[in-house]
Each structure stands twice: as structure tokens, then as C-alpha cells.
Length: 337
Image 1: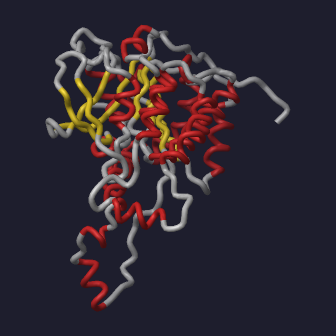
Image 2: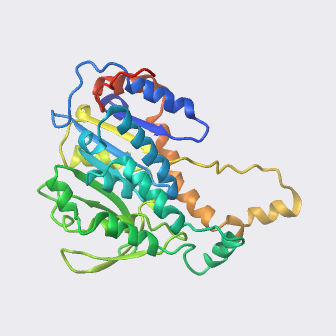
Image 3: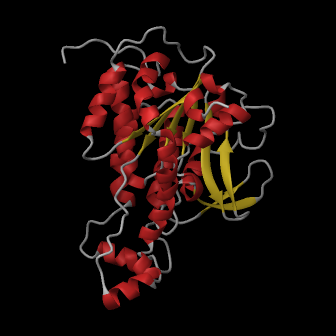
């Protein structure tokens, strides 16, 4: 049986602060000649998958804005299925609704400092102390921004625009993962009337950092409590792939996924401590685990596990030719640069 890497081109682009060469190479690749590329809707399913990462979603939005500017095309017009977790859910829903990536950048620059306000001295220490009993940050500014951005748009509105959407969250009421979906197959009949602003808030409710979110099912009227989808799928590309093959019945060779991640910090520990200090760190409790650091470690672990499976040497050798061949974006207009 052929592996995923043999049957589907999954290109994972890791945006690092010190990895400008990767971005330059990618942009150079995308500007190459696209021979025989197809457009969306011609037997292919193009998926845009966006990872979580809090305010670092600004890096994702900036990257996509540059792609849209360079190729004079929108992600809305080039992709069929949008999948995003946490901050990626906000961006994915905005793109699926037709918002340009540049406007999403402006949105993040506007609400980011309001949500993650650490301007005053001692504010970070206060938030760490506060996290022992409650969330570090309040979600009122984020809720207000999502209300203004999405209004009363629902998943059904996106489906009627010809777009399919997947948004992972974790349901605390049932204790199980939950993926909000457009009703894009006959078996799916429960989620179309969810408001975009509500599922975006639910998917981005990172434990310890932001409050959990209560949503009432528009189908059953039963209230349920949610937290960040990153606790089980911070890197949702494979969820999108599984949905395409199982629910949509798309052949693997006709699926093309562009997966974009947020910057990641190094979570490695250096075993330099000895004696009493080492004994304390080995028997660490909540304080030595770092509280929020532990949550970030757990959420990021899915990305670190999934990334090697789609970034093998073979995948790297194929990535440039796949981008050119599959034509996720049309040939770029030639400029003087």
C-alpha cells in the first residue's frame, strides 16, 4: 500500500524567526513556471491547514498576505477546504468567509495587544499568580473582535459560498475531541447553524491562558463547554486529510494540502543541575513545571510528532516540484525583482 507521502503532497511550512532562507526559497518556488496546473474545482481538493499558536498567528496571517500580494490571488479563491485550530481557526474562518489575509493582519495587530496586555511592570508576574486559580487573560476583547469580524455568519453561509471548514475543539462536557464542520456530506447535519464567532472562540480557549467557552448546540439546544482544540490537534493537517478521504470520498492523489505553522520555541531542557536542585526538578510540582509552560508543551507536542511524518527527506525533495506541478497558486506575474 502506498504511503501518504506517495499519494498526497503535504507541504508543511515552518515559519521561524531566523529562517528567512526558507521563506525566500518557498517564494522562489512558487514563482516558477506552472506547467499544466489545474484550478480549484477541476477534480482536485485543495486544503489550507493552519496550526494554533496564540498571537503568533500574526506570523501565519503575514505569510499568507504576502502570498496573496505576490500572486494577486486570494486564499479564498485558491482553496476548497479550510482547517484551523485555535488562532488558526480564526484565520481559517476569516479566509473562508472571503476576508483578505492583509485585513486579518490588521485585525491581529488591533486586538492582540488588547487580549495579551502586559505593558505595565509586574503584569506578567501578576498573570502567573492569577493562573493558579483562573485564566491568565480575559477573553472579552477577543470575543468583541470576533463579534465585529464575523457578525451572524454561520458555517452554512461558508458552505453556500462553496467552502468546506473543519475547526477542532475539545468538549469538556463529554470529555472528547470535537471537530466543528460544515455539513458538506449527507451524513453531516448538525453543525451548519453554529456561529463562526462562537466556534472560533471555543477553539482558541487555551487552558490556563483563556477562559473555557460555553456553547449551546443550535440543533439540540444542549449547552456544552469547550476548550482549545490544540489539546488534541494543534497541527490539524492530518484531520483534514482524513476528512477528505473518508467523508468526502476524495482519492488521495487528488488531495493537495498546504499546512502553515506558527513559530515554535525550543522546549528542550539541559541537564546541568546537580545535587539538591536536580532532586527538586525531578520531583517537580505545578510551580516547577511552569504551569502555562506545561500547557504549551502538551499542545505543541502534537505538532512536533506530526511534523517529521510529513517532512522526511523524500518529502523535502518532492515539495518544490509538487508546488509547481499542483499549482496551488497560478504563475506569478513577472516583476523587476
